[in-house]
Amino acid sequence: MDEIERIRAFNRFYTQHLGLLTDRYLDQDRPLGPARLLYEIGDRADLRDLRARLGLDAGYLSRLLRTLEDHNLVRVGPHPADGRARVAALTETGRRERADLDERSRRAVTDALGNLTAEQRAELVAAQATVHRLLRLAGTVIAPVDPAATQARTSLLRYAVELAERFPEGYDPATLTAPGDVDGTMLLATENDHTIGCGLWTRLAPGTAELRHLWVAAEARGLGLGRRLLAALEADAAAHGITAVRLGTHAALTEAIALYRGAGYLPIDDYSDSPYNQLAFEKVLITPGWRGGSAGRSGSRGT
Image: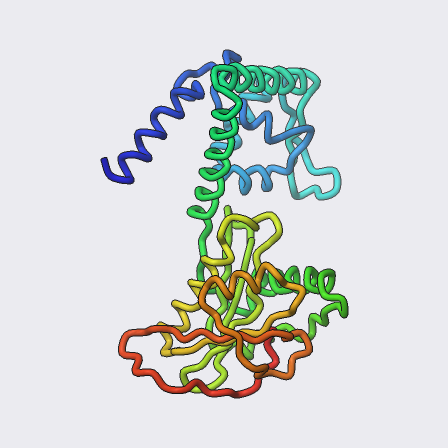
């Protein structure tokens, strides 16, 4: 059985195991869709946020909400702070049903775990954590973006705010690479249309590029996204004729340093005048038709 068929078989087993094939999820009076929506609404939720978070079509979400409204579980109305937006809020009946849903779910998991030893329970929890991490990583989209686009600038500003907190000397966002200075490519990583990472490269000299502003949002760390972004930047640079890439980083960014060393970057002498580049690294990219040669050593202000 190949990889695809193994995953399909697991999906069939798991959906049946969780009772997703019936119209009475956890023996309540409704299927999984409306039950999950009750959970996601919490006390109150913006409809735009619900659509983005659950990846639901606006029409389908409206139909689900209408069903819940008909059962007096939810009320939909204007946002108290933004009349153009709409929110869904649980009624008292809806809060009771959600509490019952939580209790049924916990009891079902407790009953299932009760058939396993302590070691088997730990193995199952660890395996599910791995599946969750890898599915998130698989669902993350990495694509080129206009460096001047709002999403691109917002991601770099989030990066700058984090560096200002982590660097003892702080970080000046004015040192971020300006859109017009990106003569290579900027990549953006998104999960359900939410930006969770970025990075870019610029040219230092013929055949040599510098990687800058490689960043993964706190909520996406531990997925392996940093390695994937780094590899994507290298591949994009190589496709544009780059045979060697350099980068500078700060000594405080220990996770980044470990990432670069693990990806084959070797220490080199400082090549820039950026105060934040306390350590410098270089990696030779093996590209089709590459014949070797020394990389240029032009200066840069990248971080």
